Image (cartoon, rainbow, N blue to C red; front, side, top):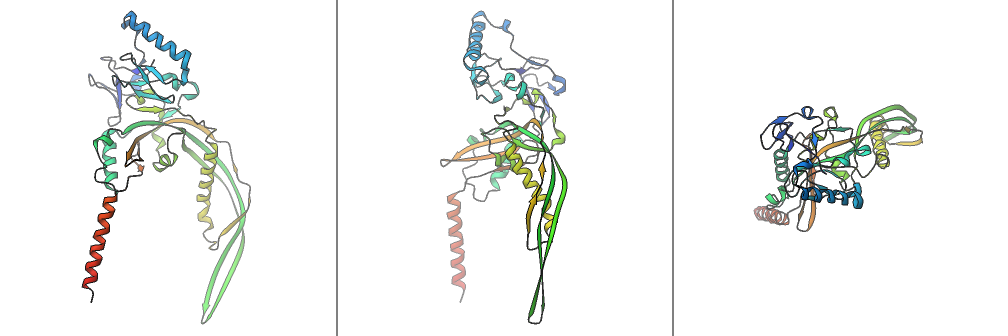
Length: 356
């Protein structure tokens, strides 16, 4: 059974309105904060159903329990009783029959229960504006690319992220080479100096985010960073209402090799300024650095997604649902390129004719 958060006034389904930062009832227009709605996730009461409907629902639930378990791809909508197909990692979705928001709470328990969540700050209308602005910024974007058909696919999704707190003891020793030249008349004197350079310090990072969903593009997620983690809240399913949500299929330990690569990159960035004096380079000879076991948190972070096809190719747009940072790959218009080519050709020809 899928859960829902009901309006205390009229029992209608509530959704989280990112623009108002409130839970809103679409029926009586009541508004509530997430804190006001603690412990209000409910299941559709069986006594409201006919005997036949109850039998049908029980058979459906028994089929899911026996045949599919938690890895199944069906849930029962608590608003209309329909069996809805969903991906096994989907934790919040909508009923395809009646449109009601639904939280599949059994997929967010135990190890899948998030520690924290950053609620959406940008709603759908703001995301659409950002998409239009992003498209217009593309010099080669096709004229017919922006369409209602594409906009309809814009989806608000809570992405599962692992957040790592990392400490590292950096201990690097190597040879730094510095060279200077002095010219007097026709003579140039080059002086090269060699130094034994040691860099030893403790570096710490907090909340390094890595997405834990295999099917989500890692580069896109990195492109819309950073998230502002001061706004992070303890996980409350109320914020999922009206959005989709994924649960992780890569554990925090699965992500550690990628984390180590990222931390090493951070270390390089941190040390680079101290090597600038070595204008001929620095060659590491000993590296006794240690990256200690990180502390992990599991959080749901807000992202607007749009996947679309254009001329048979796949393209992606995504936007940080908290900061509005966008990333993606817009298609290139061949027509615009051809038009520009002929414009340049005409200008070049005109200039050539004017030249004596």
